[in-house]
Image (cartoon, rainbow over all chains, first blue to last red):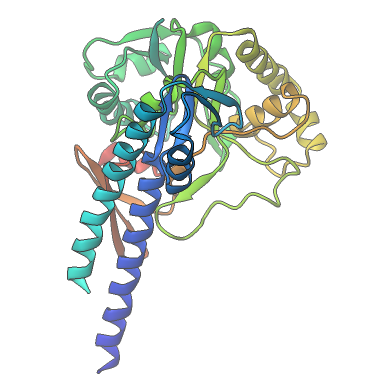
Length: 103
Length: 249
């Protein structure tokens, strides 16, 4: 492969990497959501913890400011967490598929 | 409980912030659907286009501050607490482009004052590393969400005090930049009012397009830019645009 083509390939790789990085940052930002006056991240860690605790009627969870929040409807809260998580990751997935086509 | 957006907009002889407002205000209306108050001066008010239902607060802004040897009218931000007619205020820079409704999330959080302490450079250049420019971690005063409360008021009152004695605080916190910067004024104020201990800030990073990137297009859902011969774009994400040339795109 000629050096010009190698350079173009390198540029494309950089642009793809940056687009992926930006999409991931956007996704992380969109994972922040408010529930009962507290901010939470709808990420795997929160979902796993809430799922683990969901057999209880209520439980206390730390929000993003390390303040304790009483979760009095674990089922509804878990549902919102998963909904937001999948909404965000689906958007990221769509972009990822587009980027794969450009490789 | 009322909530709304408060913007400060003052033209200088070099930069047309009214033209930037013409781009950002419609985005705020579309994506946040909140009432907006623009704090401005008479000269800038005359330049502002029709932006629909907006409340204006005309003030004689304080002058005398500079950045890169050009006038920088940023000395009135501490007045935001008194000026804001809202119970919960989203105070943001006029060059913050709201392409999402993400800020509504922060309004729903029952915190007195929320601010970014992390920034993300969308050009991938990691342009913002100010760790060695002061002994206090820098906050970004680009977007501040505050509730009317004694705690919030104390922060804004502290910013006013810091502004008055800014060179002293620059020396105290060994801040390299000697011109007045709201970023540092709020960093110091929040540090002082939190009892000189670290506190949590907004969990997301402030997505920013740095000054070296030239904005080439502003669309209804995102922006495009050029940097060092390369083109970039981002959609469906709020962006703080530093390039003042965005006024003329």
